[in-house]
Image 1: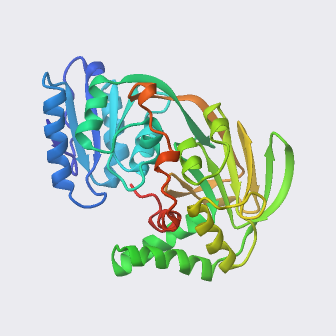
Image 2: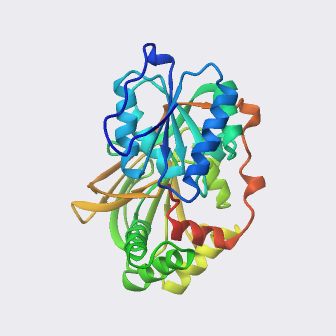
Length: 341
């Protein structure tokens, strides 16, 4: 059953909702929304012929309301269909509710799904929902908000803000996205003073970008050692050095090539929790490519069993290293596109 929920009301789920599957679809992300809906319908008809599933489709503004509506009616499995931003929004909404999370990745990078070995083909991802297993998966928390891949302050959230302004004026394009990166670095390249508390003590640093990472797949993707520590229940705090525009761009390219050097192109610390205190009482932040203002200080912590996710058997999980690719433009694209929903 497909329900377009751009306008209320959201229909009630049938009795026995705990056994129902609700798929929250971001129909406003990317192109080919109608084809994606048709593919989802066909896949669920194939793998769940007995029924028991509902698609709630709407634009980005409907993701959280649709998820809350399904939770309020006792649905036991919420499936996010979209990119990392969409999946993160659904996960943040259901965190602590005791329900299962399913993932159908249709975004650009799909770091969360790749790290769990979930296929990027719609039919194959639905097959995982039908035949996979539910297991505990680590998430990160910044203050009271969940993130799956990363949370950041500084340059990256400002790039996202600039990108949105450029898109409103000139429309979406890769050229416009790349221009947002260059314009942000040209207009506001400076760093910020941060007080960082972690396992190794307290220190004060000046950096244009602080990036807290929860995804071991993403760390492997960037060619940075330490993914095993994330799999063991820690977070990684990546700090960019205070340097020139040219050096920052060079550092991004070196990350993309897997040539970045610790203590030269970045600093990294690991721990189960960090507290970052900037000078401002409120600061623009980004979580999985979605920006918002948050009150400071910012308290980050790992949640080793933060979510219950339906995925393939552990032996089927994808290895990040074999897909790294070594493409320098990937990092620039990730900055420019903001790891979109």
